[in-house]
Length: 354
Ligand SMILES: *[C@@H]1O[C@H](CO)[C@@H](O)[C@H](O)[C@H]1NC(C)=O
Ligand SMILES: *[C@@H]1O[C@H](CO)[C@@H](O)[C@H](O)[C@H]1NC(C)=O
Ligand SMILES: *[C@@H]1O[C@H](CO)[C@@H](O)[C@H](O)[C@H]1NC(C)=O
Ligand SMILES: *[C@@H]1O[C@H](CO)[C@@H](O)[C@H](O)[C@H]1NC(C)=O
Ligand SMILES: *[C@@H]1O[C@H](CO)[C@@H](O)[C@H](O)[C@H]1NC(C)=O
Ligand SMILES: *[C@@H]1O[C@H](CO)[C@@H](O)[C@H](O)[C@H]1NC(C)=O
Image 1 (cartoon, rainbow, N blue to C red):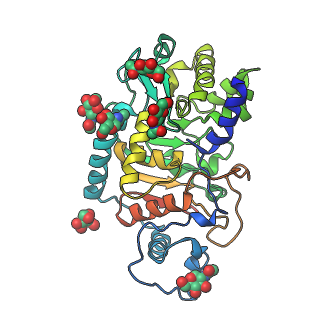
Image 2 (image 1 turned 180 degrees about the vertical axis):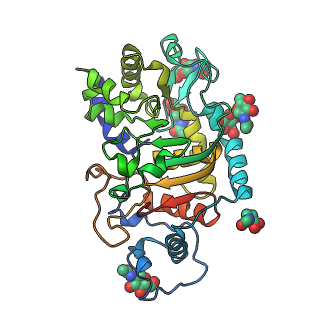
Image 3 (image 1 turned 45 degrees about the vertical axis):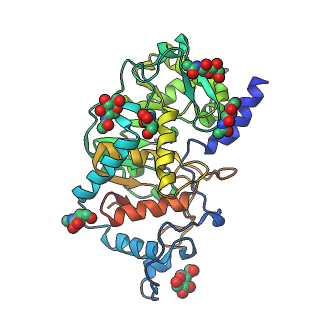
């Protein structure tokens, strides 16, 4: 019974807290973030912008994108004033340094954890407390250069690996393949692990657990972040994952994402008019980076099935598996990134890095 429940959760949580799932086919999700200020005609000569599936982007977004593509090769510097403003607001609402992960400091024995994916609570027992670190590893986290690496097919043959490895902090999602070092680099500082991966790739950790531990080792001394308490039924698998890590000497690197942080961040964006069923992990961690980093570059964020030259690209840089249903609004998230780029708050890397 329990297992069946978790299985159901599996299907949801593939999309829930997680994956960088780019929904190219989800055309009704094409909400426009900002009303276009004016109608911009794309002339035939501007072939770069013509090649974008422009029915999915507002005119304003197309204009930003065109600018972005024209400036890809130039050095980019963030606007410090704008970055500070984002950081101040996000610290006020969400405070990732302290609240991003569950710690003994922010999780009290006998209290309840409120799930962010459903109206449910998980009681905080001694078993759970014993798995938590004393304090957040992110207190006083300050980075100059951060790379947030989405899993989009646009990264394939991008030659961005060297550039990504130069960042001080490299964030990746859902245990992605590291078999493309030239395109995605080798360095990882933070990597998320969705329940769906544990269920599908590692058979719920019910059989051999060594393949999971070995896969984790390919991320070196990266921290592992598990969005484990978004749903009550994820509890059992969450314990199993950390017990496995403990057995293989990896507990020091393992952390549960704090559902309270996730729901505060969702409320923050809801107040700004953006309210998808779930924010994607990519979007969550761009917001985390905004609190931690001075100079943010996004790679592999491109929610379209064609690349800049109109060539079909796989869904992920390592496979072409599509999500089964969509709760995220990847196009709207992309529109937010474009907006942030237009304010010089972050840089979006598209196409080739060399
Ligand atoms: C893109 O938009 C322009 C005008 O907004 C239109 O003329 C053109 O046909 C569109 N291109 C595609 C590929 O949809
Ligand atoms: C940075 O952003 C602020 C606020 O939007 C703006 O007034 C300022 O001109 C920008 N600075 C640069 C160098 O673009
Ligand atoms: C984050 O939360 C902790 C604990 O409540 C607090 O000490 C710290 O000052 C907060 N940081 C910010 C930037 O609000
Ligand atoms: C979430 O927001 C509430 C209300 O603003 C605040 O009291 C709480 O500390 C925040 N929690 C986290 C984890 O940021
Ligand atoms: C935690 O939740 C349980 C069950 O919903 C409830 O009985 C208990 O009073 C709650 N504890 C606290 C500290 O809120
Ligand atoms: C959540 O569930 C509790 C009882 O299980 C109920 O009293 C409460 O109204 C629910 N809240 C929402 C927002 O659905």
